[in-house]
Image (cartoon, rainbow, N blue to C red; front, side, top):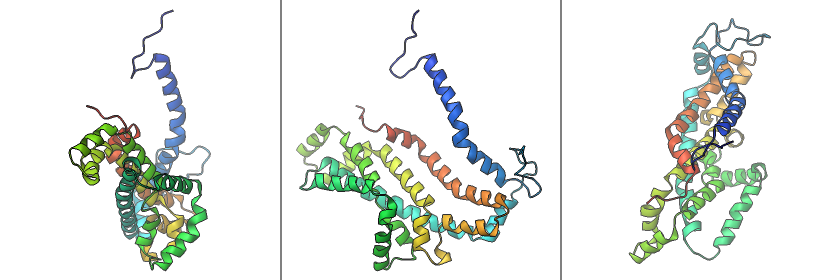
Length: 283
């Protein structure tokens, strides 16, 4: 029996069938809860969402739950605070992780291996171990109950530094050597050779930084005491106390918090998937 030829980037029909079956099994688990929460957020007060045979599509679709969220909490202020924290975190990671990753990958300096080892060691420690020392540091700097204090601990993620280091290491050293012969310094090599080659991985770092800052709940809850400075994840807790018996409004608040993540990922997805396979430089 002859076997179907499979190209370098292709796959056999059997492999395709297996992948589609796995996709069909995983999709309901990953996307199902989101779609159900979205459906719940549009259901009217007269619909029973706890019935034994619940309806997926709203029978009385309404925007009233979203209006109720806006009337109950200053949701736009909370969104603005979360955006400020997210932008500060993105800027810190995009600049700091890029510079640190380039230094570890392309520059020779004393103690480089020790620095890399310390970065790897920080990834082993759970965040709860250092959260007290982080709070004491932020408080001593006078940044407690500020949005800058919320963004500061995540301004440079060690995982993002390692991702950028791996991306810069994938650039052939011969290109750097040729640039050095032409008289280019380290900064010029970073700007003209390094950055154009790691834009995909930089997009991955931006997405990770945004999601981490936007979804963070524990750290803002510890640092912030003034309700005017609350981020969206902390502010949405008011919905759980005010609408314990109305999960429709809680679902609407959840969707409001989730929409920006979808927008950011949709805008950067083509760079994201390119960054996952970052490495080869096409001639």
